[in-house]
Length: 588
Figure (cartoon, rainbow, N blue to C red):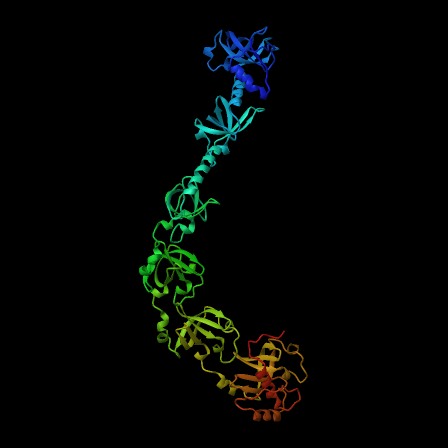
């Protein structure tokens, strides 16, 4: 009986060739692992007794046969010697399956090498991939090598027959790893090279959307991918490629550029249609009014589509004749339908300037008729600036009251000193400028000028009482009545030298002072606390030296004890060289 001993890898091919040729084997030594030829001597239950020419018979399980019904005495087949003597049965332990596996493995090794192409049938799904039957030998197909694109579900591949590339053969593990992806990728590379060489700029090709990104879409041109950038999809504006395309969609695209070295292809979709900007000037002449849809909003304006692929910009300055629009979104939303006027067309730069206010009447055209200079108006204080207050006269039309036109009696540094937002006020129209869209209003002009009465009410030499309202470096302001302040120069606070005003006076202090100067033209009253105790003779001298309106060049402030006429000069110095009016910041 022929016996086969375990062979080294280098000898297996020759041994297997001898085995296939039916050559006899002179080696009669029975060793575990050897493949020998046996003959069925008997079948008892699940045990098949096999004669291998040894001193005792061996046993093979009936389940190792593909068709148990064919197992009958006299049947010859190869078996692998497992044990020469089983401890329990005392018989030789044999395995038909192990022998079949060994023979098949040697056949595979003889026929196939790493890198060759084999044909196999996918039998089942296992962890990490699939099992492939190649001439009765199982090979492993990793999930990542099933196709060039990742396959999430492997079950549809079961039962399919494909060609595979042998990636690795491991004799130690009796393991074969194959790849279908490698074959497909190789074929695709050949096809890709041919296609790349045939592409010409300007030609139109059929393609299929393979993938969509934020910046464009990759189009499969039957073997090679090209990039269709978002800017080449439409003559109009689109926010995302998914607005126009879907994965799997078939379309005609134009080849814009081919870089054969880097294998990059640029494609265009809009280029397959006529450019609407070529006839834009005829379609939309300047001055024409058209309806459009808001397609995009920016901080500086709104983009309005007035025809497929044609968008124009309405700048925020062209939204309204009267309203100040800070952001386009304050007045419009994407999807709004609006009536616009064509302001300018630049076909070369593909720009159209549009206006919304030009489709409406401009209320400033009749502003001078509705708001004549000298007329009185009533409105609500809408907003403040550092130099004045805006009063709403009608929707979108504001008038501005400058701080200098707020009070006859005191200087206003900020409108909040005498007005409140939302307050209803009456004012006089001072000026109307339709070109610059400005109306100037006067608050104080709506009331008589009180200084004709103030000058006579506060005669030079009279004693008055008041409350310190503000401290400055050169003196203190004393409120005599609502809105009327007088100034006590620092030299007139005390008979003694005063270094700092706040050393002697504080805001809120009640004081008594003598009027030493009244300047009706400059609307100023000079007071002296130190002069309260003047004699009647000194008072008369002061009254005689005073006039209804005192003006003249500024002079140095007198010191305590100087002649009476120097009092007025002290205030000339304060009035002329120092801005001392109420509202100035307090000294620190």
